Every structure is written in structure tokens, then in C-alpha cells.
Amino acid sequence: MDFWLNNYDLLTGSERSLLHYILDHQETIQKMTCQKLADQCGVSKTVVINMSQKLGFEGYNDLRFFLKNRAKVAPMPASAETVEAEITGNVSKTIQLNRPEILQKAARSIVNSQCVYIISRGTSKPVGYYLEHLLLTLNVKCINIPDYNLLNIIARQMTHEEVLIAISLSGKTPIIVETAKIVKAYGNSLITLTAFSNNPLVQYSDLALYCSASSMDTKVDDIITRIGMFAVTDLLVHYVQVELLKQNKLGF
Image (tube, rainbow, N blue to C red):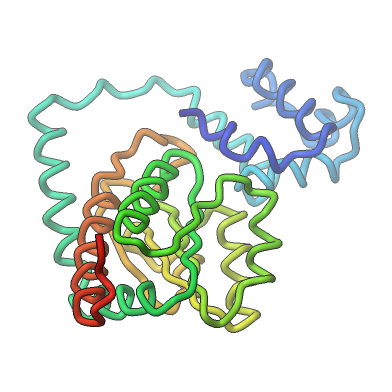
């Protein structure tokens, strides 16, 4: 999945037109200054910079640097044996990264909440849907939020009896980090699921769950396996089931 599309809904009309021009002229863009690109597309430099930042870059120069690197010849795909070893290793390391006491606390927070909200983005979205399905199967009230326009509203309207689970491999997805900031500003509960790193999203987390991943740079390669995230999800749901049994809330 092309990461450009993951952030497309954040762009204004002018920014979308600008992005279309960039995608159609990627080689030319690498040699264009911010002002020249703005003049070419009939927008201001501010529009160019804002669009770049919404796509996750620090600014236009960062975007241009990314395009230069992306233009290089891609390496040959790894062998099947290498991929199998990577998957096995990621699952094993993921299990080691998550201490039982953290999983227990996360499960208790979920079971004791009046409602669980789940947010994810891009290639991590299937993890969110998977978690929602399993929690609903256990009769845990849970809502996966597919409409990013609702995130700001829900983050502000959450109560102290509810919990938000934010899923992002890099932990740097702008709209998810911004939602986490709002949740914490209102003093509400936040559980995060990211790759193992000191990323921005974890800074706002009450309980941080981690997965092992060979890479976290989804800008360059968004086909990075999320197998570790699915492994954490299965672990978490197991602890939720145990907690429900303890509280005599499990019923099918």
C-alpha cells in the first residue's frame, strides 16, 4: 500500500492537487525548490509546507529527500526462508517484549471500562478490526473508529470510564499521535500498541504494548509485516478472557 494514500483524507483541495502534481512529476520535484513548486502549482509556499507535514515529513526538503531515496533501485526480495525466519523471530521477540503484569493491567482496564475505542491507520487497520472482533466476541463493548474525522470528537467526549487503544507500528502517525494528546489532556485512559521504540505515541500512553518489527519506516516500506501486532492482540485478548473469568463476567 502506498503510504501517500494513508494521509490523503487530511489534505485540503489545494494540497491534494499539489500532491497529484508531485506524484506525476517525481523526478522533476527532486530538483525543484519549495518556491518554484509553489509557483508551478499556483499555491503559496505555506501550502507546500503544510502538505508535506500532513504527510508526515518535517517539511518540503524532507519530502524531496525521501523522493530521491525512493528513486533508487529497490533491493531484491528476501528468500522465503529469510521471511519465515523473520516471522518466527518477530513473534518470539514480541512475546518477550510484553511483561505479563502489563498485559494484566491492560486487560483489567479493558474489562472495567464502559467502552473501548480502537484507532489504527493504513496497513495496521486490519489489526484494529481483528481486536474489535475478538473483544466483541467476548461481549466487551468495543468500537473500532474507521472515520478519521471523528477521532478529534471522540477523544474530547470520552469519559474516565472509557479507554482508547491506539495502534501504530511507527508510533509516529500524526493523526493518531494528535488524538492521543487530546485523550491525555482530558485525563482519560490510553493503551498503545507500537513497535518497540521510544516513539511519540508511547509518551502519552498509560500502558504500552510492543511488537517486534524488522523496520518501522512505513514511509519507505509499508509492506512491513504486522505479525507481531497480531501476536500481541492474541496475548491481550487471552488476558482479557482470564480477567472476565475472574470477575464472573464471561458469558457466551
